[in-house]
Length: 180
Image (tube, rainbow, N blue to C red; front, side):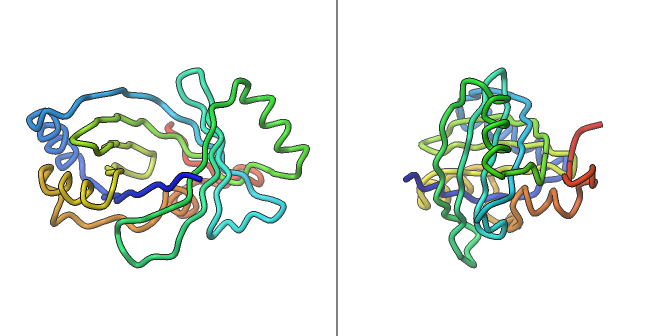
C-alpha cells in the first residue's frame, strides 16, 4: 500500500509564470508535459467522499489508481494510493463496467512535472483553473514551498474530483470538465 503526501495551491496566470521562473532558477529538473484524461468510477461499495477509482489515460498509456482519503484539517494531505499501469484502457473500462462500476466524473488536465530536491512538483491546468501540487515527505514539501515562494500562498483544500463536481457540465450520468 502506497501513501501519497501532497499539498495543493490554486494559481493565477501571473503566479504560474512566476512559479515556472522560480523552478528554472532553483535548478529543478523539468520531467514532462502531458495531456491527461481522468475517468472516475462510482458503484458497488465505493464511498465517493473517501474513495476514488480512477482510470487515467496519458500519452498512449493508462494507469488505474485506487485512492482512499484520510481525514485531516491540514493542508498537507496524506492518502492511500495504489496504482498500476494498464496495457489496454478500453478492456479495463469494459471490465469495470461488467463489475458494476460506471463513469461518474471525467476531467482533463495539462500537467508539467518537475523534480526539486526530493519533491515532485506538478503544475496543472484544468478547465476550471491553474494549480500546483508538491508531493514528497512533509519536511520536503515545506522546504520546496519555501524555496518556490509558496509559503504564504493559500492552499486549495478541494480535490480535483470535488472541483469537477462544482465546475463541470452534466453529460448524461457523467459530470465532465473538458477543454473546449
